[in-house]
Amino acid sequence: MKLSIVIPAHNEEQRLPPMLEVYARYFSEKYGDEAELIVVPNFCADRTAEVARSIGFRYPQVRVVEELNRVGKGGAVMIGARTAEGDLIGFVDADGATPPEAFDDLVHKISLDGCIIASRWMKGSDMSPPQPLSRRMASRCFNLMVRMLFGLKLTDTQCGAKLFRREVIQPVLRNLGVTSWAFDVDMLFQTKRLGASIREIPTVWHDVAGSKIEIGRSSVSMFVALVRLRMFYSPLRFMIPVFSRLAERLLHYAG
Image 1 (tube, rainbow, N blue to C red):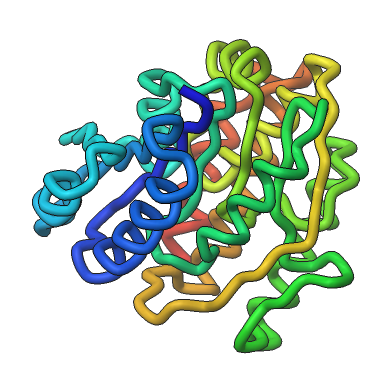
Image 2 (image 1 turned 30 degrees about the vertical axis):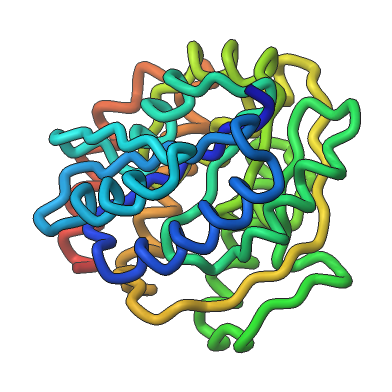
């Protein structure tokens, strides 16, 4: 098996089918049995798992690993990656914002790097339609915090398309414990700590209607998650329970 793509999906019965259909057709035609698509429906209250399996009946490259508990996007990625058989293991969002050609670009350009990620903010990227000012500001503030707290000199840690070499992602998964907003940052921070190289390339990304993200509460959640993660890797780790209680109050007021 050459390539494994994990697709975490929470209540995505509407957006997943067209995305999965396009990905399954593209990668089956190009890689045949050398590619697999692992859909991980998690804590779904709709027909996400059912529609994924229906597409899997027509494309043997599609596998469905359903998780009934609330594990978040990060937990779903971890579940899928642990069952993956590929030498290259990556993940992409279920909304279809990243077209299959853009993900395949990661495969072709990973070279000897341990990890390659797509960026919506690098020169040469194609992001349409342009995001509202509030989302752009939130994204850039988050990126600034990532750079300051973790030393990750990347333009876009949150873009949904990432690809790892198997020998890199396996030890990274063993050290992960964050499945919330800071999951991507934790993955990349662990990759950096392993000494593996991270390459970032411009990508094509199209916003897809149906996002469940509320910018106000999400921004606070992202801030809290980053601070908690930084504390986890510092001498202040013992303060996390106290910080978490304060954060819950902050999120309550933000909601």
